[in-house]
Image (cartoon, rainbow, N blue to C red; front, side, top):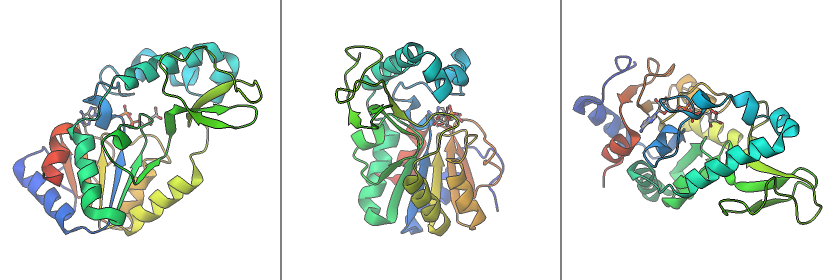
Length: 252
Ligand code: APR
């Protein structure tokens, strides 16, 4: 069933993937940091990845935040600055075109917190790991979107109750938004095709969206720079950059 593991992005593989997509009326796409890499946003595990120069448990956990909110906020403020300078790339734009073509038959589940999909015009987006632009009060839970970079003061405090605000992202050990994850899993199990793009597929339950499609016997297309645990299980595995391959899959 699967394409040769690590199948290169040769024309025949792209043509097979494109045919699957063209025949599909209900498509789910799962994206990871690789989709934003060509926009200049660092990934986590690849070359130059964030987890090569930082330890996740030091920065992306509730315990790290409780221990040193200033340190955690200084890292997120830097990430917000970097993401703030990024613009959507042709991979984001191709997914927005696919949504325009499919309408309600399309769903984009992203692990990314940069909102570049929305900037490219995607609307049917489920943010499985939250958004770096959202701040949530640790006291009254009030949420607000603030795109200031840098933030005027760190750590930010809630204007309503004075408690510390935290980044509105999902940290290691925390639950994902149940409605977003549930909808993505159900859509993946009943779609005509699922595209998994730019993710190492090592973080669950998000990566489980692709596994749900595989378990349901749905065609799965992978677009990724490096091989992943999914590469040998998917219908077609395209090795390359999402900024180049997604436009070829979706067309003009
Ligand atoms: N085109 C396609 N794939 C790319 C590109 C590119 N231009 N650049 C990098 N990649 C691939 C890498 O080969 C890698 O497999 O994207 C993948 C990125 O993997 P990670 O850095 O692990 O990012 P991601 O899979 O999104 O991480 C999942 O882990 O740290 C947590 O919450 C964080 O959402 C994140 C989650």
